[in-house]
Amino acid sequence: MDHKYQLEPVEVPRVETAHRRIVTRLPVPESLAVFAKLAAHEPVSMQGQPPVVWDRAEGLHVCDRWGNMWLDWSSGVLITNAGHGRREIRAALRAMLDRPLLATYVFAHEGRAELCERLAALAPDPSYKVFLVTTGSEATENAAKLARTYGVRRHGRGKHVIVSFEGAFHGRTLGAQMMGGMPALKEWIVELPPGFVQVPFPDGFRVEDTGFGLFEESLRRQGVAAESVAGVVVESYQGIGPNFLPAEYARELGRWCRRHDALLVMDEVQSGFGRTGRMFAYQHYDLTPDLVCCGKGISSSLPLAAVIGRADVMDLYPPGSMTSTHSASPLPVAAALANLRIIEGECLVEHAAREGAVLAAGLERIRRKHPRHFGKALCRGLVGGLLVVRPGTREPDAGVALQINEKCFQRGLLMFAPVGWGGGCLKIAPPFSPPSCQDAKSIDAENEALAEPTGRHGGRPSSAADRAARRGRWRPGSVPATHAEHL
Image (tube, rainbow, N blue to C red; front, side, top):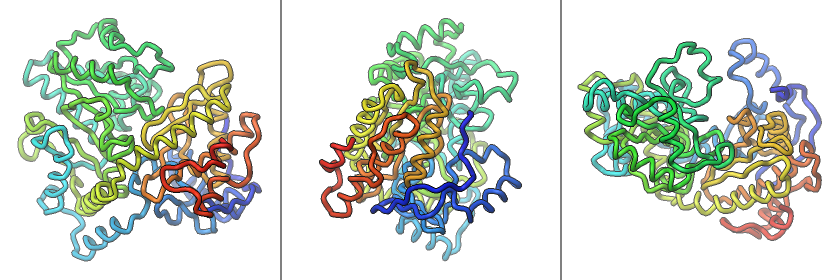
């Protein structure tokens, strides 16, 4: 990628709205010592995000210690669904610290039992069981292990193939990247083992054919018999977009897995806990997965993940043979329980569905305003994206995408670096704790940021929606008329 976030402070327009405040040069000159220390002691792989030194984060906002405040459109990479630094989560953690109970290995504690019960109640069937782990990668690897074990024990060693999708991301560990669908991330493996195959993901943009026949034809071309498939692992939406499965394709996939006794594994690490306007995104497709992998938004804070699955599958391994050192550690468990109480008590799933309509409409207006530079607007609930293309093509334009992202950062709107699809996707994933309508208020800032890299002007230095918010003219779920005109 040619364009990188610059670490030379520049003058940027001052911003002072209800949700964004920029009062210094960016990056902040005093912050450069922190970045220099990180560059000296961390691998370069940890670099690449907009140059903000986080000091505190609460609700919808991320602040540095020099007076700047960003409206967060990243949710810490889809973690803080219920908002940053929620008082209820902090109180739950404080109570655990004061007990004190900080680590238990796999010895029992009451919170672990309660969380497993709560998660099982969210499953397709309450008889499903829950294995608590630490990261999404750990969850997806264990799901692959269970699917392959199920196939081999039930049908013999020939039923061991794990099918996943091109463009998929299931984590950064060995097994997760063997399942993943990004060839560049597998180069280090050198010799890929047999038994892991990918098929095209029917996104309707890069892959225009969205019929389920594409799945079956791809397996035939690769010499994979349906009877050899132990499991199909699919993200409920592909994080590189977000790309959503066509509904009928998803239903056909579910029927195919049932017909061939292949486990359907839904990777909900990014999409779970209300992100798409349903508790889990697979619910949009009327599917009954055998295994569900989740993480990120499970706690809105600390590291925790889980595999939720059919009891007969989850019980394949005897006591002590499928564990994790920090599985169900008391602090993340306490955070997750508090997080679930917030999500359910404040009806945040329904809230995300309502606000998603606002976000989707705004992104589509941006796409129509800049059709040469945006190939597609994607959105469901409070996860969306804009595919940045080279004019006249469907090829990603990573340089322009990063420039837009940087301009948003300079205007007080924080997104993580363009992801997937060759770096050409602007991913949008705000927290969804009310009071909201942050999407309507933020789209002006993004629209302003689009003007310079795309050569289209007309944005105003102060967001009309932010001004309306200060005057109390909008309510959650509505788009101010002034803002609609501006978009």
